Length: 184
Image 1 (cartoon, rainbow, N blue to C red):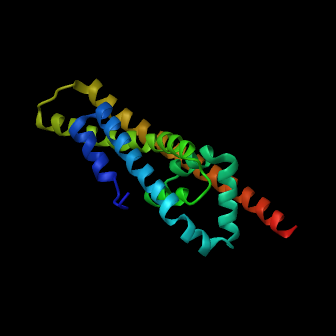
Image 2 (cartoon, rainbow, N blue to C red):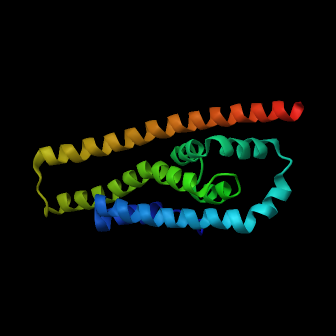
Image 3 (cartoon, rainbow, N blue to C red):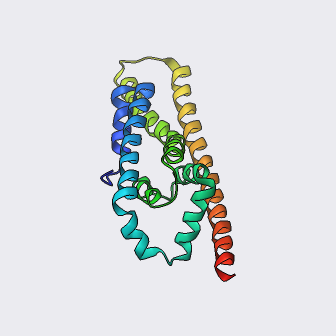
């Protein structure tokens, strides 16, 4: 809500609480902050911002797209690493997105990155225990840590790339449709 990057807190949650409890805590906290910022955008800033950008064709396209396909657009925006979460919280509050679609799309869309960063934090704790000799899992355990890390990062990258491409295509299509309606 305060535009502070949550990556360090997410990594710390993984280190302190482990994967399952860390993901639960980070997920709940990030959703509370996202919804609070969304509601601020919706009820405090919307009218002021709308007056200043109402004539923008890109704004009209985005607002129109959120009326028709809100959940999917929120989900894709959350999966894209190119769009900062903090900015999205307020920006979606300015659109026609219903709170229900925003909350569900945000939660599902933020979950892969949350799991990745919490996992990295918990992995750091496991690596620290391994290197200090407090934890001996043998080569199968070490291999599992490495493979799990690579798989988690790889999956997150694939999801993010596809989401970014799909979001760009959908917004371009909506922008074209809005331009055609304005030209008529």
